[in-house]
Amino acid sequence: QVQLVESGGGLVQAGGSLRLSCAASGRTISTYGMGWFRQAPGKEREFVAAIDWTGGSLYYADSVKGRFTISRDNAKNTVYLQMNSLKPDDTAVYYCAAANTFAAVTTERRYDYWGQGTQVTVSS
Image (cartoon, rainbow, N blue to C red; front, side, top):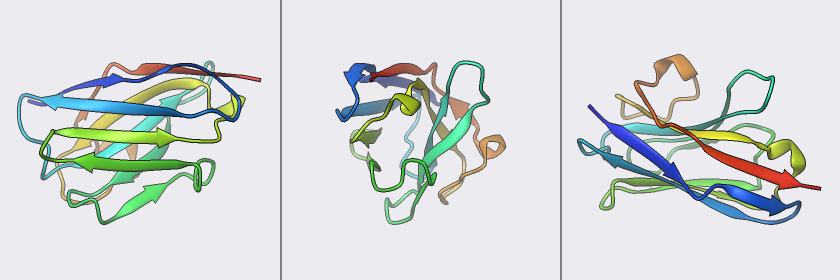
């Protein structure tokens, strides 16, 4: 079993930055594909970013490309999401997820473990 705990969310003004962290426990995530998803009020959860086990393959939703960066530190069993140039439309609960595969995965149903989420609110 893998437990995931997100942190780093909060309230920020438009144009600002936040860095989300996802700390894993229970087992190493070094061979897992990791991803970030988000869910805004009244909307379905959507893909944000994914990273493969080496950190060499990255995928982003078009809406965040160029502004968000996903990274991982396998030694710390942690995944990060650096969010820059934030917009009010980025307001959502952000979830970290782990997929039992080496690849970077963009499909929600392929993820095996999920965190509880962290709230990000961007004011205009």
